[in-house]
Amino acid sequence: QVCPPCRKPCEVKCQHSRCRRDCGAPCVPCQEPCGRACVHSACKRRCGDVCLRAACVLACIRTLPCGHPCRGLC
Image 1 (spheres, rainbow, N blue to C red):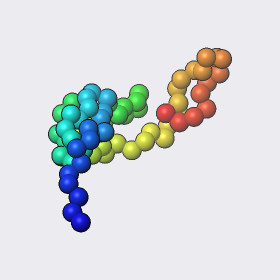
Image 2 (image 1 turned 30 degrees about the vertical axis):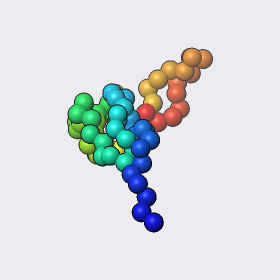
Image 3 (image 1 turned 180 degrees about the horizontal axis):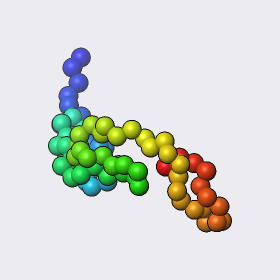
Image 4 (image 1 turned 135 degrees about the vertical axis):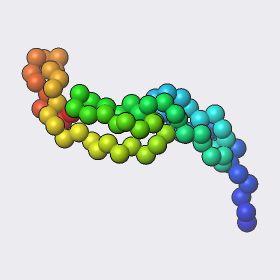
């Protein structure tokens, strides 16, 4: 049996917007700058493109509410 296209609202979203199309329709890629960034580097592509920036592996520079330095990664 062939199923009809899905008519539920699309669940794809980013920090800038949410897709307003039906689930079975292709999404329009976000054209805003990618928000994946830290103090060490940032993605230079658009939000809807595949991000080429890997997760940062440098030490976190934040201070925790207790006053101790963060021991995690950025």
